[in-house]
Length: 209
Ligand SMILES: [Zn+2]
Image 1 (cartoon, rainbow, N blue to C red):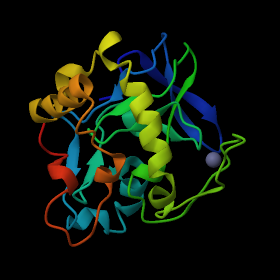
Image 2: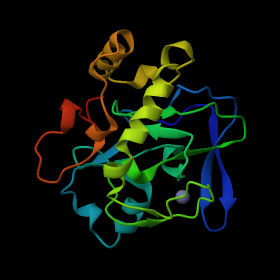
Image 3: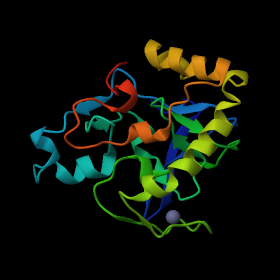
Image 4: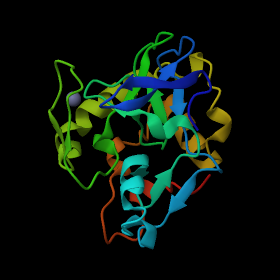
């Protein structure tokens, strides 16, 4: 579920739709969390490779740490990539605002944490643009992403969290343990899908909502 204070709008003919803030969204706010209405396709679901549905799956889903394809039922599926995003995935399964987001600003994310299986050409226009988003990005970027997530999490308990009610209890407990003690931080590395592994890293289950 995408943050409730957002809406979709046309970005341009090349990109199509995007998601934009309708009010101020503070740094540290959850901007997306999986919810019970999202559609989860297991890694062996035939619709992932069926020519009839394959392109839609590739465009509108992301791959969780257990290899499942997750389709958001709401506007979360229209969030675009940026190499300097204002939100990012956390090791706790939700997305977080990395900086204050102003009304009218587009919500962006880094697809480098979505376990993409293909190289994505990028022209996001940011001076930090990587030009190509690849499956190898986490190996290079995880330390940078973790640092950014920890900076944002420092504001987690002091800002409004309309999506917190959707976070599963086990993950919430793990998050609060880290926020209260500074111990047990769950790296974004735990989001990485390793084909053939039977259990997600760090025990995180994308379906445990
Ligand atoms: Zn870029």
